[in-house]
Image (cartoon, rainbow over all chains, first blue to last red; front, side):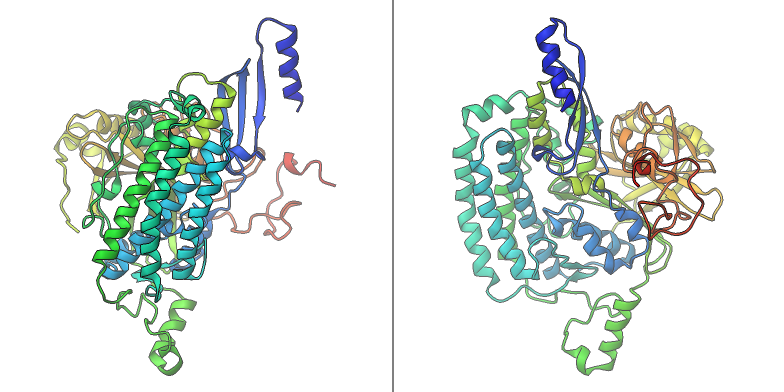
Length: 404
Length: 178
Protein backbone atom coordinates (compact mmCIF):
# COMPACT_ATOMS: atom_id res chain seq x y z
CA UNK A 1 0.00 0.00 0.00
CA UNK A 2 2.89 2.40 0.67
CA UNK A 3 3.87 2.32 -2.97
CA UNK A 4 0.41 3.34 -4.02
CA UNK A 5 0.37 6.34 -1.71
CA UNK A 6 3.76 7.31 -3.00
CA UNK A 7 2.45 7.12 -6.54
CA UNK A 8 -0.45 9.46 -5.88
CA UNK A 9 1.73 11.88 -3.95
CA UNK A 10 4.22 12.07 -6.77
CA UNK A 11 1.54 12.68 -9.31
CA UNK A 12 0.02 15.46 -7.25
CA UNK A 13 3.11 17.32 -6.12
CA UNK A 14 5.65 17.19 -8.87
CA UNK A 15 5.20 17.69 -12.58
CA UNK A 16 7.98 15.25 -13.45
CA UNK A 17 7.35 11.57 -13.07
CA UNK A 18 9.43 9.42 -10.79
CA UNK A 19 9.81 5.67 -11.13
CA UNK A 20 7.73 3.80 -8.63
CA UNK A 21 7.83 0.11 -7.81
CA UNK A 22 4.45 -1.57 -7.57
CA UNK A 23 3.81 -5.08 -6.38
CA UNK A 24 1.03 -6.82 -8.26
CA UNK A 25 0.18 -10.04 -6.52
CA UNK A 26 0.93 -12.68 -5.40
CA UNK A 27 -2.61 -12.47 -4.03
CA UNK A 28 -4.53 -10.74 -6.76
CA UNK A 29 -7.53 -12.08 -8.68
CA UNK A 30 -6.28 -11.04 -12.09
CA UNK A 31 -2.96 -12.85 -11.82
CA UNK A 32 -4.81 -16.17 -12.27
CA UNK A 33 -3.04 -17.79 -9.35
CA UNK A 34 -0.03 -16.86 -7.32
CA UNK A 35 2.03 -14.71 -9.60
CA UNK A 36 3.86 -11.69 -8.31
CA UNK A 37 4.74 -8.96 -10.77
CA UNK A 38 7.13 -6.25 -9.69
CA UNK A 39 6.30 -3.34 -11.93
CA UNK A 40 8.43 -0.28 -12.46
CA UNK A 41 6.00 2.51 -13.17
CA UNK A 42 6.59 5.80 -14.87
CA UNK A 43 3.38 7.56 -14.06
CA UNK A 44 0.67 5.27 -15.38
CA UNK A 45 3.04 3.50 -17.74
CA UNK A 46 4.81 0.26 -17.01
CA UNK A 47 8.49 0.75 -17.78
CA UNK A 48 9.71 -2.67 -16.72
CA UNK A 49 8.12 -5.86 -15.51
CA UNK A 50 9.80 -8.47 -13.37
CA UNK A 51 7.69 -11.58 -12.76
CA UNK A 52 8.48 -13.50 -9.59
CA UNK A 53 7.30 -17.08 -9.75
CA UNK A 54 7.73 -20.18 -7.63
CA UNK A 55 4.98 -19.67 -5.04
CA UNK A 56 3.40 -22.92 -6.20
CA UNK A 57 6.61 -24.86 -6.78
CA UNK A 58 6.05 -28.46 -5.75
CA UNK A 59 9.14 -30.03 -7.24
CA UNK A 60 7.23 -32.28 -9.63
CA UNK A 61 10.43 -33.19 -11.47
CA UNK A 62 12.31 -34.15 -8.32
CA UNK A 63 9.32 -36.10 -6.98
CA UNK A 64 8.99 -37.98 -10.26
CA UNK A 65 12.50 -39.37 -9.82
CA UNK A 66 11.28 -41.33 -6.80
CA UNK A 67 7.97 -42.48 -8.29
CA UNK A 68 7.25 -45.36 -10.62
CA UNK A 69 5.97 -44.51 -14.08
CA UNK A 70 2.36 -45.31 -13.18
CA UNK A 71 2.55 -43.21 -10.04
CA UNK A 72 3.63 -40.17 -12.04
CA UNK A 73 0.28 -39.83 -13.82
CA UNK A 74 -1.40 -38.09 -10.85
CA UNK A 75 1.58 -35.72 -10.68
CA UNK A 76 1.09 -34.70 -14.30
CA UNK A 77 -2.59 -34.02 -13.59
CA UNK A 78 -1.56 -31.25 -11.30
CA UNK A 79 0.55 -29.37 -13.82
CA UNK A 80 -2.13 -27.70 -15.86
CA UNK A 81 -5.11 -28.50 -13.70
CA UNK A 82 -7.57 -27.17 -16.28
CA UNK A 83 -6.72 -29.91 -18.73
CA UNK A 84 -5.27 -33.01 -17.00
CA UNK A 85 -6.03 -35.45 -19.87
CA UNK A 86 -3.58 -33.59 -22.14
CA UNK A 87 -0.83 -33.82 -19.55
CA UNK A 88 -1.50 -37.52 -19.00
CA UNK A 89 -1.38 -38.08 -22.73
CA UNK A 90 1.94 -36.26 -23.14
CA UNK A 91 3.56 -38.31 -20.40
CA UNK A 92 2.10 -41.61 -21.59
CA UNK A 93 3.37 -40.96 -25.13
CA UNK A 94 6.89 -40.27 -23.90
CA UNK A 95 7.04 -43.52 -21.89
CA UNK A 96 5.46 -45.48 -24.73
CA UNK A 97 8.15 -44.24 -27.10
CA UNK A 98 10.82 -45.47 -24.70
CA UNK A 99 9.11 -48.84 -24.43
CA UNK A 100 8.55 -48.98 -28.19
CA UNK A 101 4.84 -49.67 -27.87
CA UNK A 102 1.66 -48.02 -29.08
CA UNK A 103 -1.73 -47.97 -27.46
CA UNK A 104 -4.55 -49.82 -29.26
CA UNK A 105 -6.60 -47.74 -31.68
CA UNK A 106 -9.65 -47.43 -29.45
CA UNK A 107 -7.51 -46.15 -26.60
CA UNK A 108 -5.97 -43.58 -28.91
CA UNK A 109 -9.40 -42.31 -29.86
CA UNK A 110 -10.47 -42.12 -26.23
CA UNK A 111 -7.33 -40.21 -25.33
CA UNK A 112 -7.72 -37.71 -28.15
CA UNK A 113 -11.39 -37.27 -27.33
CA UNK A 114 -10.53 -36.46 -23.74
CA UNK A 115 -7.64 -34.21 -24.70
CA UNK A 116 -9.94 -32.19 -26.95
CA UNK A 117 -12.58 -31.96 -24.25
CA UNK A 118 -9.80 -30.69 -22.00
CA UNK A 119 -8.79 -28.14 -24.60
CA UNK A 120 -12.33 -26.81 -24.67
CA UNK A 121 -12.42 -26.71 -20.89
CA UNK A 122 -9.12 -24.82 -20.73
CA UNK A 123 -10.05 -22.36 -23.45
CA UNK A 124 -13.50 -21.81 -21.96
CA UNK A 125 -11.98 -20.55 -18.77
CA UNK A 126 -9.87 -17.94 -20.51
CA UNK A 127 -12.69 -17.02 -22.87
CA UNK A 128 -14.61 -15.96 -19.80
CA UNK A 129 -11.76 -14.88 -17.57
CA UNK A 130 -10.18 -12.35 -19.90
CA UNK A 131 -13.37 -10.30 -20.21
CA UNK A 132 -13.82 -10.65 -16.45
CA UNK A 133 -10.34 -9.21 -15.83
CA UNK A 134 -11.43 -6.29 -17.95
CA UNK A 135 -14.65 -5.82 -16.06
CA UNK A 136 -17.25 -7.94 -17.84
CA UNK A 137 -18.41 -10.56 -15.37
CA UNK A 138 -21.16 -12.15 -17.45
CA UNK A 139 -19.05 -14.15 -19.88
CA UNK A 140 -17.28 -16.09 -17.14
CA UNK A 141 -20.52 -17.22 -15.58
CA UNK A 142 -21.75 -18.56 -18.92
CA UNK A 143 -18.40 -20.16 -19.65
CA UNK A 144 -18.52 -21.92 -16.29
CA UNK A 145 -21.94 -23.31 -17.16
CA UNK A 146 -20.53 -25.00 -20.26
CA UNK A 147 -17.41 -26.09 -18.44
CA UNK A 148 -19.66 -27.86 -15.97
CA UNK A 149 -20.94 -30.05 -18.82
CA UNK A 150 -17.37 -31.09 -19.58
CA UNK A 151 -16.67 -31.77 -15.91
CA UNK A 152 -19.73 -34.01 -15.87
CA UNK A 153 -18.43 -35.89 -18.90
CA UNK A 154 -15.05 -36.35 -17.20
CA UNK A 155 -16.80 -37.60 -14.09
CA UNK A 156 -18.75 -40.06 -16.17
CA UNK A 157 -15.60 -41.41 -17.82
CA UNK A 158 -13.17 -41.47 -14.93
CA UNK A 159 -15.05 -40.78 -11.72
CA UNK A 160 -13.09 -37.58 -11.14
CA UNK A 161 -14.10 -34.14 -12.26
CA UNK A 162 -10.70 -32.53 -12.45
CA UNK A 163 -7.75 -34.82 -11.86
CA UNK A 164 -8.80 -37.63 -14.11
CA UNK A 165 -5.53 -39.66 -14.27
CA UNK A 166 -7.28 -41.70 -16.92
CA UNK A 167 -4.34 -42.56 -19.17
CA UNK A 168 -2.09 -45.50 -18.52
CA UNK A 169 1.07 -46.51 -20.27
CA UNK A 170 -0.26 -48.59 -23.15
CA UNK A 171 -3.84 -47.43 -23.10
CA UNK A 172 -6.45 -45.99 -20.82
CA UNK A 173 -7.76 -47.14 -17.47
CA UNK A 174 -11.21 -48.30 -18.51
CA UNK A 175 -13.48 -48.40 -21.48
CA UNK A 176 -16.01 -45.62 -22.01
CA UNK A 177 -19.08 -46.10 -19.79
CA UNK A 178 -22.57 -46.98 -21.01
CA UNK A 179 -24.63 -43.98 -21.93
CA UNK A 180 -21.59 -41.86 -22.70
CA UNK A 181 -22.18 -41.46 -26.40
CA UNK A 182 -25.64 -39.85 -26.24
CA UNK A 183 -24.36 -37.53 -23.53
CA UNK A 184 -21.37 -36.29 -25.51
CA UNK A 185 -23.41 -36.04 -28.73
CA UNK A 186 -25.75 -33.77 -26.82
CA UNK A 187 -22.76 -31.65 -25.79
CA UNK A 188 -21.52 -31.46 -29.38
CA UNK A 189 -24.97 -30.30 -30.51
CA UNK A 190 -25.34 -27.65 -27.85
CA UNK A 191 -21.85 -26.27 -27.64
CA UNK A 192 -21.35 -24.60 -31.06
CA UNK A 193 -24.44 -22.50 -30.40
CA UNK A 194 -23.00 -21.48 -27.07
CA UNK A 195 -19.79 -20.37 -28.78
CA UNK A 196 -21.95 -18.17 -30.97
CA UNK A 197 -23.45 -16.72 -27.81
CA UNK A 198 -20.02 -15.80 -26.46
CA UNK A 199 -19.17 -14.13 -29.72
CA UNK A 200 -22.38 -12.17 -29.66
CA UNK A 201 -21.74 -11.21 -26.07
CA UNK A 202 -18.06 -10.31 -26.22
CA UNK A 203 -16.57 -10.31 -29.69
CA UNK A 204 -18.09 -7.06 -30.86
CA UNK A 205 -18.39 -5.49 -27.44
CA UNK A 206 -17.03 -1.99 -27.81
CA UNK A 207 -15.38 -1.84 -24.41
CA UNK A 208 -13.73 -5.22 -24.89
CA UNK A 209 -12.44 -4.20 -28.32
CA UNK A 210 -11.01 -0.96 -26.97
CA UNK A 211 -9.25 -2.79 -24.18
CA UNK A 212 -7.75 -5.57 -26.28
CA UNK A 213 -7.27 -4.48 -29.90
CA UNK A 214 -3.77 -3.22 -30.54
CA UNK A 215 -2.81 -3.92 -26.91
CA UNK A 216 0.19 -6.12 -26.11
CA UNK A 217 1.22 -6.68 -29.71
CA UNK A 218 3.82 -9.42 -30.13
CA UNK A 219 5.36 -9.73 -33.58
CA UNK A 220 5.99 -13.13 -35.14
CA UNK A 221 9.78 -12.75 -34.75
CA UNK A 222 9.44 -11.78 -31.11
CA UNK A 223 7.04 -14.63 -30.44
CA UNK A 224 9.49 -17.19 -31.84
CA UNK A 225 12.40 -15.54 -30.06
CA UNK A 226 10.51 -15.71 -26.77
CA UNK A 227 9.56 -19.32 -27.35
CA UNK A 228 5.79 -18.79 -27.27
CA UNK A 229 3.73 -21.71 -28.47
CA UNK A 230 0.12 -22.71 -28.91
CA UNK A 231 -2.57 -20.09 -29.49
CA UNK A 232 -0.22 -17.33 -28.32
CA UNK A 233 2.15 -18.07 -31.19
CA UNK A 234 -0.57 -18.66 -33.74
CA UNK A 235 -2.18 -15.31 -32.88
CA UNK A 236 1.08 -13.71 -34.06
CA UNK A 237 0.75 -15.32 -37.45
CA UNK A 238 3.04 -18.34 -37.05
CA UNK A 239 1.30 -21.36 -38.46
CA UNK A 240 2.49 -24.17 -36.20
CA UNK A 241 0.41 -26.82 -34.54
CA UNK A 242 2.04 -30.04 -33.36
CA UNK A 243 -1.22 -31.90 -33.91
CA UNK A 244 -0.88 -31.28 -37.63
CA UNK A 245 2.90 -31.01 -38.06
CA UNK A 246 4.04 -33.99 -36.01
CA UNK A 247 0.80 -35.95 -35.75
CA UNK A 248 0.60 -38.20 -32.73
CA UNK A 249 -2.14 -40.69 -31.85
CA UNK A 250 -4.93 -40.37 -34.43
CA UNK A 251 -4.60 -36.69 -35.31
CA UNK A 252 -3.52 -37.75 -38.80
CA UNK A 253 -6.96 -39.32 -39.30
CA UNK A 254 -9.13 -36.37 -38.36
CA UNK A 255 -9.71 -33.13 -40.18
CA UNK A 256 -9.34 -29.80 -38.51
CA UNK A 257 -8.23 -26.30 -39.30
CA UNK A 258 -5.27 -24.65 -37.59
CA UNK A 259 -6.44 -21.23 -36.52
CA UNK A 260 -4.02 -18.35 -37.04
CA UNK A 261 -4.40 -14.59 -36.81
CA UNK A 262 -1.94 -11.93 -37.88
CA UNK A 263 -2.53 -9.12 -35.41
CA UNK A 264 -0.64 -10.58 -32.44
CA UNK A 265 -2.60 -8.52 -29.93
CA UNK A 266 -4.71 -9.56 -26.96
CA UNK A 267 -7.84 -9.66 -29.09
CA UNK A 268 -6.24 -12.03 -31.61
CA UNK A 269 -5.11 -14.34 -28.83
CA UNK A 270 -8.62 -14.42 -27.39
CA UNK A 271 -10.21 -14.97 -30.79
CA UNK A 272 -7.81 -17.80 -31.66
CA UNK A 273 -8.94 -19.69 -28.59
CA UNK A 274 -12.62 -19.21 -29.31
CA UNK A 275 -12.14 -20.47 -32.86
CA UNK A 276 -10.09 -23.41 -31.63
CA UNK A 277 -12.97 -24.57 -29.47
CA UNK A 278 -15.05 -24.95 -32.64
CA UNK A 279 -12.34 -27.07 -34.23
CA UNK A 280 -12.13 -29.18 -31.08
CA UNK A 281 -15.82 -29.95 -31.32
CA UNK A 282 -15.25 -31.04 -34.92
CA UNK A 283 -12.43 -33.35 -33.83
CA UNK A 284 -14.58 -34.83 -31.07
CA UNK A 285 -17.41 -35.52 -33.51
CA UNK A 286 -15.02 -37.25 -35.90
CA UNK A 287 -13.61 -39.30 -33.04
CA UNK A 288 -17.09 -40.45 -32.13
CA UNK A 289 -17.84 -41.42 -35.73
CA UNK A 290 -14.57 -43.23 -36.31
CA UNK A 291 -14.01 -44.88 -32.93
CA UNK A 292 -13.53 -48.62 -33.48
CA UNK A 293 -14.46 -51.41 -31.13
CA UNK A 294 -11.57 -53.24 -29.55
CA UNK A 295 -9.32 -53.34 -26.54
CA UNK A 296 -8.69 -50.15 -24.59
CA UNK A 297 -5.37 -51.34 -23.27
CA UNK A 298 -2.33 -53.05 -24.71
CA UNK A 299 -2.03 -56.78 -24.03
CA UNK A 300 1.35 -56.76 -22.31
CA UNK A 301 1.25 -58.24 -18.83
CA UNK A 302 4.57 -56.72 -17.76
CA UNK A 303 3.36 -53.17 -18.48
CA UNK A 304 -0.43 -53.02 -18.35
CA UNK A 305 -2.80 -53.94 -15.55
CA UNK A 306 -5.15 -56.90 -16.13
CA UNK A 307 -7.97 -55.74 -18.37
CA UNK A 308 -10.61 -57.77 -16.58
CA UNK A 309 -10.50 -56.59 -12.98
CA UNK A 310 -12.62 -59.53 -11.79
CA UNK A 311 -9.87 -61.93 -12.80
CA UNK A 312 -7.69 -60.51 -10.02
CA UNK A 313 -10.01 -62.22 -7.54
CA UNK A 314 -9.96 -65.67 -9.12
CA UNK A 315 -6.75 -66.03 -11.15
CA UNK A 316 -3.38 -66.34 -9.47
CA UNK A 317 -1.52 -64.97 -12.51
CA UNK A 318 -3.72 -61.90 -12.71
CA UNK A 319 -3.30 -61.30 -8.99
CA UNK A 320 0.48 -61.50 -9.23
CA UNK A 321 0.50 -59.25 -12.29
CA UNK A 322 -1.66 -56.69 -10.52
CA UNK A 323 0.40 -56.80 -7.34
CA UNK A 324 3.71 -56.63 -9.19
CA UNK A 325 2.69 -53.62 -11.23
CA UNK A 326 1.23 -51.78 -8.25
CA UNK A 327 4.07 -52.49 -5.87
CA UNK A 328 7.14 -52.40 -8.09
CA UNK A 329 6.08 -50.89 -11.40
CA UNK A 330 7.63 -51.93 -14.68
CA UNK A 331 11.12 -51.48 -16.04
CA UNK A 332 11.70 -49.12 -18.93
CA UNK A 333 14.71 -49.69 -21.20
CA UNK A 334 17.70 -47.38 -20.94
CA UNK A 335 17.51 -44.36 -23.19
CA UNK A 336 16.12 -40.90 -23.50
CA UNK A 337 13.17 -39.38 -25.26
CA UNK A 338 11.69 -35.96 -25.86
CA UNK A 339 8.06 -36.14 -26.75
CA UNK A 340 5.89 -33.08 -27.27
CA UNK A 341 2.18 -32.64 -27.82
CA UNK A 342 -0.01 -29.67 -28.56
CA UNK A 343 -1.54 -29.03 -25.14
CA UNK A 344 -4.17 -26.29 -24.86
CA UNK A 345 -1.50 -23.84 -23.73
CA UNK A 346 1.13 -24.81 -26.28
CA UNK A 347 3.99 -27.25 -26.66
CA UNK A 348 3.96 -29.59 -23.68
CA UNK A 349 7.06 -31.74 -23.80
CA UNK A 350 8.35 -34.49 -21.57
CA UNK A 351 12.07 -35.23 -21.65
CA UNK A 352 12.69 -38.50 -19.88
CA UNK A 353 16.04 -40.15 -19.24
CA UNK A 354 15.67 -43.75 -18.19
CA UNK A 355 18.45 -45.73 -16.55
CA UNK A 356 16.63 -49.01 -17.10
CA UNK A 357 14.84 -49.08 -13.73
CA UNK A 358 11.21 -48.62 -12.73
CA UNK A 359 11.68 -44.92 -12.05
CA UNK A 360 12.82 -42.18 -14.41
CA UNK A 361 16.38 -41.00 -13.85
CA UNK A 362 15.37 -37.51 -14.89
CA UNK A 363 12.05 -36.14 -16.01
CA UNK A 364 11.94 -32.63 -17.39
CA UNK A 365 8.62 -30.99 -18.14
CA UNK A 366 8.69 -28.40 -20.87
CA UNK A 367 5.70 -26.52 -19.54
CA UNK A 368 4.08 -24.21 -22.10
CA UNK A 369 2.79 -21.70 -19.53
CA UNK A 370 6.27 -21.29 -18.06
CA UNK A 371 7.62 -20.20 -21.41
CA UNK A 372 4.53 -18.30 -22.50
CA UNK A 373 4.74 -16.13 -19.40
CA UNK A 374 7.93 -14.69 -20.84
CA UNK A 375 5.66 -13.15 -23.47
CA UNK A 376 5.26 -10.38 -20.90
CA UNK A 377 8.72 -9.18 -21.92
CA UNK A 378 7.80 -9.09 -25.58
CA UNK A 379 4.36 -7.56 -25.30
CA UNK A 380 5.90 -4.57 -26.95
CA UNK A 381 5.10 -0.93 -26.45
CA UNK A 382 4.92 0.48 -22.95
CA UNK A 383 1.44 -0.07 -21.63
CA UNK A 384 -0.78 1.43 -19.10
CA UNK A 385 -0.85 -0.52 -15.88
CA UNK A 386 -4.43 -1.52 -16.63
CA UNK A 387 -3.38 -3.00 -19.97
CA UNK A 388 -0.88 -5.20 -18.21
CA UNK A 389 -3.85 -7.14 -16.85
CA UNK A 390 -5.19 -7.64 -20.35
CA UNK A 391 -1.81 -8.82 -21.62
CA UNK A 392 -1.37 -11.21 -18.73
CA UNK A 393 -4.88 -12.59 -19.12
CA UNK A 394 -4.50 -13.07 -22.85
CA UNK A 395 -1.27 -15.04 -22.45
CA UNK A 396 -3.31 -17.47 -20.35
CA UNK A 397 -0.70 -18.79 -17.93
CA UNK A 398 -1.74 -21.45 -15.43
CA UNK A 399 0.45 -20.92 -12.42
CA UNK A 400 0.47 -24.58 -11.40
CA UNK A 401 2.16 -25.33 -14.70
CA UNK A 402 4.49 -22.34 -14.54
CA UNK A 403 5.77 -23.41 -11.15
CA UNK A 404 5.72 -27.16 -11.70
CA UNK B 1 8.88 -44.99 -36.35
CA UNK B 2 11.40 -44.26 -39.01
CA UNK B 3 15.05 -44.49 -38.10
CA UNK B 4 16.26 -42.04 -40.75
CA UNK B 5 17.42 -38.55 -39.90
CA UNK B 6 15.28 -36.28 -42.04
CA UNK B 7 17.94 -33.62 -42.59
CA UNK B 8 21.40 -33.50 -44.11
CA UNK B 9 24.10 -33.40 -41.41
CA UNK B 10 26.90 -32.56 -43.83
CA UNK B 11 26.99 -28.79 -43.17
CA UNK B 12 27.27 -29.40 -39.42
CA UNK B 13 30.10 -31.93 -39.64
CA UNK B 14 31.82 -29.76 -42.23
CA UNK B 15 31.79 -26.75 -39.95
CA UNK B 16 32.52 -28.40 -36.61
CA UNK B 17 34.35 -31.54 -37.60
CA UNK B 18 35.60 -33.56 -34.66
CA UNK B 19 34.43 -31.06 -32.04
CA UNK B 20 30.91 -32.45 -31.93
CA UNK B 21 29.84 -36.03 -31.73
CA UNK B 22 26.91 -37.46 -33.63
CA UNK B 23 24.69 -39.50 -31.30
CA UNK B 24 22.21 -40.63 -33.93
CA UNK B 25 18.49 -40.33 -34.51
CA UNK B 26 15.97 -41.84 -32.15
CA UNK B 27 12.29 -41.20 -31.37
CA UNK B 28 12.08 -38.26 -33.80
CA UNK B 29 15.04 -36.32 -32.44
CA UNK B 30 18.60 -36.24 -33.74
CA UNK B 31 21.15 -35.83 -30.95
CA UNK B 32 24.60 -34.28 -30.92
CA UNK B 33 27.08 -33.93 -28.14
CA UNK B 34 29.17 -30.78 -27.97
CA UNK B 35 31.77 -29.34 -25.60
CA UNK B 36 30.66 -26.26 -23.61
CA UNK B 37 32.95 -23.85 -25.46
CA UNK B 38 31.27 -24.64 -28.81
CA UNK B 39 27.64 -24.41 -27.61
CA UNK B 40 27.01 -20.80 -28.60
CA UNK B 41 28.68 -21.33 -31.98
CA UNK B 42 26.71 -24.47 -32.67
CA UNK B 43 23.35 -23.03 -31.62
CA UNK B 44 23.93 -19.90 -33.68
CA UNK B 45 24.93 -22.00 -36.68
CA UNK B 46 21.90 -24.28 -36.41
CA UNK B 47 19.61 -21.27 -36.10
CA UNK B 48 21.06 -19.23 -38.95
CA UNK B 49 21.84 -21.94 -41.50
CA UNK B 50 19.26 -21.47 -44.28
CA UNK B 51 18.74 -25.18 -44.95
CA UNK B 52 18.48 -26.14 -41.27
CA UNK B 53 16.96 -23.06 -39.56
CA UNK B 54 16.47 -24.50 -36.09
CA UNK B 55 14.95 -21.21 -35.04
CA UNK B 56 12.83 -22.33 -32.06
CA UNK B 57 14.39 -23.20 -28.73
CA UNK B 58 12.02 -25.66 -27.06
CA UNK B 59 13.84 -26.31 -23.88
CA UNK B 60 17.05 -26.20 -21.90
CA UNK B 61 17.37 -28.69 -19.12
CA UNK B 62 19.97 -29.55 -16.52
CA UNK B 63 20.84 -33.12 -15.60
CA UNK B 64 22.88 -34.43 -12.69
CA UNK B 65 24.67 -37.72 -13.36
CA UNK B 66 26.04 -38.08 -9.82
CA UNK B 67 28.33 -39.91 -9.07
CA UNK B 68 29.54 -40.10 -12.69
CA UNK B 69 32.31 -37.78 -13.84
CA UNK B 70 31.84 -35.32 -15.52
CA UNK B 71 28.86 -34.91 -13.31
CA UNK B 72 26.52 -32.40 -14.95
CA UNK B 73 24.92 -32.00 -18.30
CA UNK B 74 23.00 -29.25 -20.07
CA UNK B 75 20.57 -30.49 -22.70
CA UNK B 76 19.17 -28.22 -25.41
CA UNK B 77 16.14 -29.08 -27.52
CA UNK B 78 15.83 -27.13 -30.76
CA UNK B 79 13.03 -27.17 -33.29
CA UNK B 80 12.89 -26.01 -36.86
CA UNK B 81 9.54 -24.32 -37.48
CA UNK B 82 10.09 -24.32 -41.25
CA UNK B 83 11.13 -27.96 -41.60
CA UNK B 84 9.48 -29.58 -38.54
CA UNK B 85 12.72 -31.18 -37.38
CA UNK B 86 13.96 -31.60 -33.86
CA UNK B 87 17.50 -31.73 -32.61
CA UNK B 88 19.01 -32.29 -29.17
CA UNK B 89 22.40 -30.98 -28.08
CA UNK B 90 23.98 -32.57 -25.03
CA UNK B 91 26.81 -30.87 -23.26
CA UNK B 92 28.69 -32.53 -20.39
CA UNK B 93 29.94 -30.18 -17.69
CA UNK B 94 32.40 -30.66 -14.84
CA UNK B 95 31.98 -29.56 -11.24
CA UNK B 96 31.36 -26.63 -10.68
CA UNK B 97 29.35 -26.63 -13.91
CA UNK B 98 29.81 -23.69 -16.25
CA UNK B 99 28.56 -23.13 -19.77
CA UNK B 100 28.21 -20.01 -21.92
CA UNK B 101 24.68 -18.63 -22.08
CA UNK B 102 22.62 -18.72 -25.28
CA UNK B 103 20.41 -15.80 -24.23
CA UNK B 104 22.09 -13.79 -26.99
CA UNK B 105 20.58 -16.14 -29.55
CA UNK B 106 17.14 -16.69 -28.06
CA UNK B 107 15.56 -14.53 -25.42
CA UNK B 108 13.48 -17.48 -24.28
CA UNK B 109 16.69 -19.08 -22.95
CA UNK B 110 16.56 -16.58 -20.09
CA UNK B 111 14.13 -18.46 -17.85
CA UNK B 112 15.25 -21.91 -18.90
CA UNK B 113 18.79 -21.07 -17.83
CA UNK B 114 17.60 -19.49 -14.62
CA UNK B 115 15.73 -22.68 -13.84
CA UNK B 116 18.79 -24.86 -14.51
CA UNK B 117 20.84 -22.55 -12.28
CA UNK B 118 18.25 -22.67 -9.52
CA UNK B 119 17.82 -26.44 -9.56
CA UNK B 120 21.31 -27.68 -10.47
CA UNK B 121 23.65 -24.76 -9.92
CA UNK B 122 24.75 -24.71 -13.56
CA UNK B 123 26.31 -21.30 -14.15
CA UNK B 124 25.46 -19.77 -17.51
CA UNK B 125 28.24 -17.32 -18.26
CA UNK B 126 27.03 -14.10 -19.84
CA UNK B 127 23.41 -14.51 -18.65
CA UNK B 128 22.02 -11.03 -18.01
CA UNK B 129 20.08 -11.88 -14.86
CA UNK B 130 21.09 -15.20 -13.31
CA UNK B 131 18.89 -15.31 -10.19
CA UNK B 132 16.96 -18.12 -8.56
CA UNK B 133 13.57 -18.54 -10.20
CA UNK B 134 11.59 -21.07 -8.15
CA UNK B 135 13.33 -21.10 -4.78
CA UNK B 136 13.39 -18.01 -2.64
CA UNK B 137 16.29 -15.61 -2.23
CA UNK B 138 18.59 -16.89 0.48
CA UNK B 139 17.86 -20.55 -0.18
CA UNK B 140 20.95 -22.68 0.13
CA UNK B 141 21.89 -25.51 -2.16
CA UNK B 142 20.51 -26.82 -5.42
CA UNK B 143 17.47 -28.95 -4.72
CA UNK B 144 17.33 -31.10 -7.83
CA UNK B 145 20.87 -32.42 -7.52
CA UNK B 146 20.95 -36.14 -6.79
CA UNK B 147 22.76 -35.63 -3.48
CA UNK B 148 20.13 -33.18 -2.20
CA UNK B 149 17.61 -35.11 -0.06
CA UNK B 150 14.07 -35.32 -1.40
CA UNK B 151 12.69 -34.07 1.92
CA UNK B 152 15.18 -31.23 2.16
CA UNK B 153 17.42 -30.37 5.09
CA UNK B 154 15.99 -29.90 8.55
CA UNK B 155 15.49 -26.30 9.61
CA UNK B 156 12.87 -24.13 11.26
CA UNK B 157 10.60 -24.21 8.22
CA UNK B 158 11.10 -27.89 7.53
CA UNK B 159 10.96 -29.96 10.73
CA UNK B 160 10.65 -33.24 8.80
CA UNK B 161 13.77 -32.70 6.75
CA UNK B 162 16.96 -34.72 6.86
CA UNK B 163 19.61 -33.80 9.42
CA UNK B 164 22.35 -32.22 7.43
CA UNK B 165 24.98 -29.54 7.26
CA UNK B 166 23.65 -26.42 9.01
CA UNK B 167 23.20 -23.37 6.78
CA UNK B 168 26.32 -21.21 6.75
CA UNK B 169 24.44 -18.00 7.44
CA UNK B 170 21.00 -17.32 8.93
CA UNK B 171 18.26 -17.72 6.39
CA UNK B 172 16.50 -14.47 5.54
CA UNK B 173 13.13 -16.18 5.41
CA UNK B 174 13.44 -17.71 8.88
CA UNK B 175 15.00 -14.76 10.67
CA UNK B 176 11.78 -13.32 12.06
CA UNK B 177 10.21 -16.56 13.16
CA UNK B 178 10.32 -17.02 16.96
